[in-house]
Figure 1 (cartoon, rainbow, N blue to C red):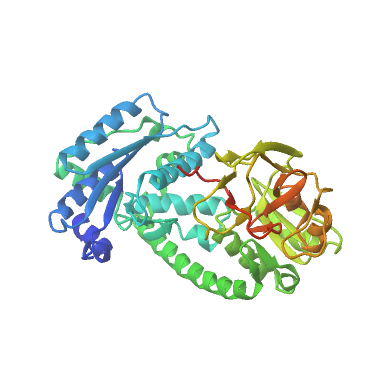
Figure 2 (figure 1 turned 180 degrees about the vertical axis):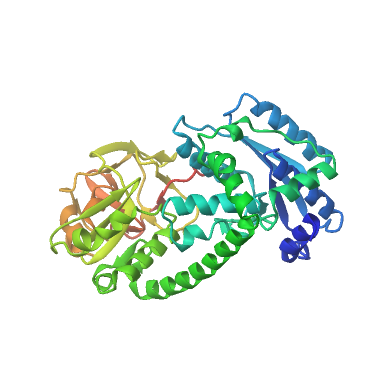
Length: 447
């Protein structure tokens, strides 16, 4: 099958959709993405109802990066693609960390540049899949990692497609030469210090000389691992239905009754749905002893990267790894949004149906702050006032969330209190004018 017909076969459902779709090529200017862009230019002649884009990410790592950008812009315009690019900054880390950081930055740039439901076409091919599976094998991956890169998938609001995944690098090069294409060469591809380059230059030539069909057979194994992983995901989802008490909470007591393999399967699936990096295996091995098996009055914690697993009141929590904020207070009259030290915003909103809105009497300056848990609060409908720390204990609020709660007070009286996903407000006298106030979990200020 020709590359063109392979592209059509892999993208038929999208291309034949009557409703106009947005198709965007991740365009580095290398031979693979140059061929993919050329193929899609031919495809557009038969499917003109869609919108076609080329997206280039300028990593700034090479002295030639500006010329690559110019190359991509030129050919995108020649082939009548809308052209978009974004410059990203990467830290100077180790080569393996830099590769992962560049990949993350590319996807974040796609998220920022492209509208929701865009179909992003990536130019990875069968030889890339071979390298990916071997690297995952080297890292001790299970079925999910050994499934390699899926041909079709989703990341957030974007659909990802790899229509050349069944084609070899040789076939792509042959197409490029046949059609007289020009492309850029990334000099870092010759550096064997990068794991993928070491495989490509030192290991794979020997393996493919001995086993010429290696890329195809490994691709078949990856596909089988993907099928097995899909079954495991279905099993984990069924278990999660009975174990998940809230988005970021699992029933620790029920979790403890599961065999270790099922328990780890559920936790990995749960974290995946939360878009949290997978913890190392040794941490999951400590889970039963140090977290689930700890004393009832303990507050055990297992931390990795920017996250932590904690247990409280027979519930297992996944939460960001943050330091408790110091008590603080700041005057605020509601005229403008105020950004909290942790990045959240408190502001008056026009959307009274928005989750987390409190109606407060704000006719003059008030104070917004965190901490100071000895101050009293009388929630709406409550017959008496109590110190915040007593309310938190009564509400069974996890201790690490208590100092992160945000309060709004005036003349020493708390008007409203915001936690993670909840809000409580004080009583309002009949006839008093109120304003709807919300604390947002990050985001932008309303214009």
